[in-house]
Figure 1 (cartoon, rainbow, N blue to C red):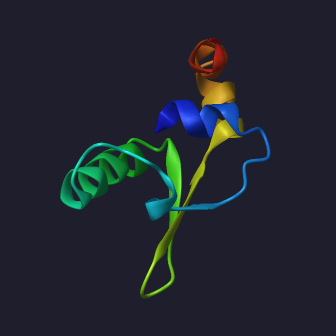
Figure 2 (cartoon, rainbow, N blue to C red):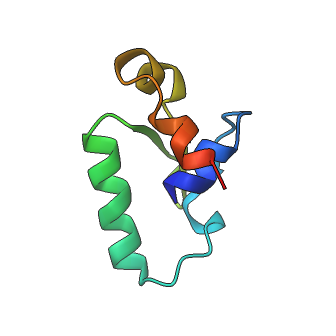
Length: 73
Protein backbone atom coordinates (compact mmCIF):
# COMPACT_ATOMS: atom_id res chain seq x y z
CA UNK A 1 0.00 0.00 0.00
CA UNK A 2 2.62 2.56 1.05
CA UNK A 3 4.95 1.23 -1.64
CA UNK A 4 2.34 1.89 -4.33
CA UNK A 5 1.69 5.38 -3.01
CA UNK A 6 5.40 6.16 -2.68
CA UNK A 7 6.04 5.06 -6.26
CA UNK A 8 3.30 7.39 -7.59
CA UNK A 9 5.02 10.79 -7.76
CA UNK A 10 1.92 12.49 -9.16
CA UNK A 11 0.38 12.44 -5.67
CA UNK A 12 -3.04 12.00 -7.21
CA UNK A 13 -5.85 10.97 -4.96
CA UNK A 14 -6.72 7.28 -5.19
CA UNK A 15 -9.77 5.37 -4.16
CA UNK A 16 -9.40 2.98 -1.26
CA UNK A 17 -10.58 0.16 -3.52
CA UNK A 18 -7.84 0.82 -6.08
CA UNK A 19 -5.31 -1.24 -4.11
CA UNK A 20 -5.08 -4.96 -4.84
CA UNK A 21 -4.44 -6.16 -1.31
CA UNK A 22 -4.86 -9.74 -0.06
CA UNK A 23 -6.63 -8.57 3.11
CA UNK A 24 -10.26 -8.00 4.08
CA UNK A 25 -11.92 -4.61 3.66
CA UNK A 26 -12.05 -4.23 7.44
CA UNK A 27 -8.30 -4.80 7.77
CA UNK A 28 -7.62 -2.43 4.89
CA UNK A 29 -9.79 0.25 6.52
CA UNK A 30 -7.88 -0.24 9.78
CA UNK A 31 -4.52 0.25 8.03
CA UNK A 32 -5.74 3.39 6.27
CA UNK A 33 -7.01 4.76 9.59
CA UNK A 34 -3.65 4.11 11.29
CA UNK A 35 -1.76 5.80 8.44
CA UNK A 36 -4.19 8.76 8.50
CA UNK A 37 -3.91 9.17 12.28
CA UNK A 38 -0.11 9.01 12.01
CA UNK A 39 -0.26 11.97 9.61
CA UNK A 40 1.06 10.05 6.62
CA UNK A 41 -2.10 10.22 4.51
CA UNK A 42 -5.02 12.53 3.84
CA UNK A 43 -8.43 10.97 3.46
CA UNK A 44 -11.43 12.61 1.82
CA UNK A 45 -14.90 11.24 2.46
CA UNK A 46 -17.25 11.49 -0.53
CA UNK A 47 -20.16 9.79 1.20
CA UNK A 48 -20.20 6.47 -0.63
CA UNK A 49 -16.44 6.30 -1.22
CA UNK A 50 -13.18 7.64 0.17
CA UNK A 51 -10.16 9.08 -1.54
CA UNK A 52 -6.67 8.89 -0.08
CA UNK A 53 -3.49 10.77 -0.85
CA UNK A 54 0.01 10.41 0.53
CA UNK A 55 1.27 13.53 2.31
CA UNK A 56 4.58 13.29 0.45
CA UNK A 57 5.82 16.85 1.11
CA UNK A 58 5.10 16.62 4.84
CA UNK A 59 6.75 13.21 5.11
CA UNK A 60 9.88 14.31 3.22
CA UNK A 61 10.13 17.48 5.30
CA UNK A 62 9.91 15.65 8.61
CA UNK A 63 11.57 12.35 7.67
CA UNK A 64 13.83 12.79 4.62
CA UNK A 65 14.63 9.58 2.76
CA UNK A 66 12.17 6.81 3.73
CA UNK A 67 9.94 7.25 0.69
CA UNK A 68 12.94 6.74 -1.60
CA UNK A 69 13.66 3.46 0.21
CA UNK A 70 10.10 2.28 -0.42
CA UNK A 71 10.47 3.07 -4.13
CA UNK A 72 13.69 1.08 -4.53
CA UNK A 73 13.23 -2.28 -6.32
